[in-house]
Length: 157
Image: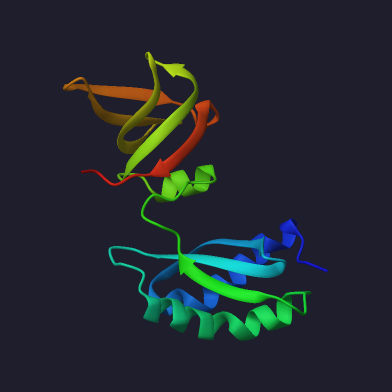
C-alpha cells in the first residue's frame, strides 16, 4: 500500500525538520512510477545556492530512516533531486515564498490582453502583481491567485 496524499504533507514537514540545519527546503514529496517501480521522489531547493549531487546524497542519508518508518510500501526507491530552476509553483503558499523572483505566469483568461507573462512576482495587498516588458514597454499586471492557470519560476536571459 502506498502512502496516501493527505499524509504526504505530514511527511514533508517531518523531513523538513531533519534538514533545516542544512539550509535546505523540501519543496515536494510525491510518488511516481517508472518501469513498474514505485519511486518516492523528494525535491529540494537551497536558497541562493545550487543543489549538488553531494547535497542530494546528504539529504537522502538524513531522511532515509524517517521514510522507512513512515512509508507503508515495502518495495520502493528513494529519489532526492533538485526542484529545478524552472519548477512549477503548486500553491499560493509557494507563490508567497517566491515573491521577488522572476516567473512565467499563464492565466486562465487574458489579463490586460496577456495570456502568458514573464516578470517579477510581487504582493499587492490581497492580490499579486507581475512586472515585466511587452514589446519593450514596461507593464504591470495585477491578478488574484485563482486567475492563474500555472506559474513557474523562470530563468531570465
